[in-house]
Length: 601
Image (cartoon, rainbow, N blue to C red; front, side):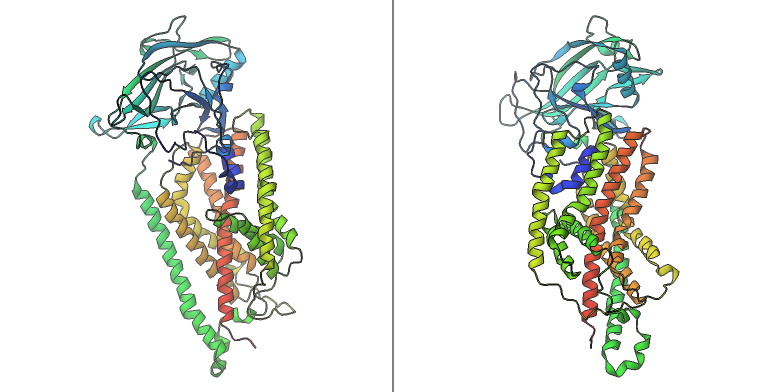
């Protein structure tokens, strides 16, 4: 089960070095379950790992073992080996003193008695007030609280919510959960005597003022353990229950964590996207099959010279349409990075340098090495700078989500040691290829561009063009944002793949339409226009994220808000590069095709 439930630093660095992250080794994090089950037998010890605390109200997680008001980890505690993705999402997995022995129930066991200072007690109270949850792990499963879905007892379905509350606010007081009842659900393995597979890990937390004793039934304790701004002594206890579950198997144990939102909404999203795509397909078909065919015939046939004045204006700019645009080096770098993003799922980083070098050669560039370095550093360097600056704020909060110095250094080494050399390799082969030939010659003197109608001005066409790609994805975008920022698991990858394919087709078509009408207005500055026509939908995604922030989230502090919007900006940049490059490549192909069909003296 792969999920979008990621920490903010993971979002930051994944957008930077997504292909490089796959080089890291896989560890035993719960969100990437093992490929084969672990069989336990009676008497086997099962390790319970503590990880972190997290909240939907804040994107700042904190390592559980570092909290000053909980039991200290054992002296021989071992940290789990984490891969790059786990480190970036804020995981800090450590063994604990909780004793779990297969088949052995524990009614009440004291873990420790912790003396908490007034400052640390106030910190605990603030975490509780901000609805922080605790994340523990057993057999790659996150500890969960159980709830039921459905109306009526006969129709209720058991579901899990990952994590359990650190405490609760009752009567305006923060009560810390200092007792937990751990329920390990197991399924007997078929064909093996005594073999058990863990299929559930439930944690029921309680806040109890125990005094010096450990209550066997926490529900009968009427007093709660309050933490405020005063010194307090907290006794941490736990109970363990081993329960056989005949309904859930190891293969479907993750289904209980998935919130099924219903496929009707997703099908509505698909239908909405297809309607938009079909509309644009019709427009492109009319342009190609009717308008262009007629225009080319009029332009080429000598006997129809009298009708040439009625033709479209796109033919009049044939001597300027391939003129090198302003800031061509930056355009090459941006498009090279965009190509990398598009094809990185099936290829590698050299594509960035290769495509950028070939386009740079079209623009008569003189230094392919300089262009390759700009391609490899422009966008990643900007994003890495944002990561570093944001990380300074996260470090100031002592969050486990802060990228450690060693990990940050590893990212820089991979950037300069892998990404940059591969870009240079791709650029080397790209500059060795023949220059892409354009139909016709570019005029020595640029043609004067007439004043366009108000609705054909670049700002208007770009703004309108970006609306349609956004309309294709905005429904699915809502569920993606919920999975990223509200800790829900996203598993509708079939719908997402289909929407993504429709999005790419929409970007192709809207860019062709915008560029065609721009050329008909005798404006030959189409290079940047073709890129922005589809990439401008990233601006609408940012606006939508602002609405999501105000309507769905409860973030009310500066640093968490800064994390949200910085991540959103970076995601929008990556999305804009992908969609803009798709639109540019399709428009470039379209223009070369239509002008190659015109007879040029």
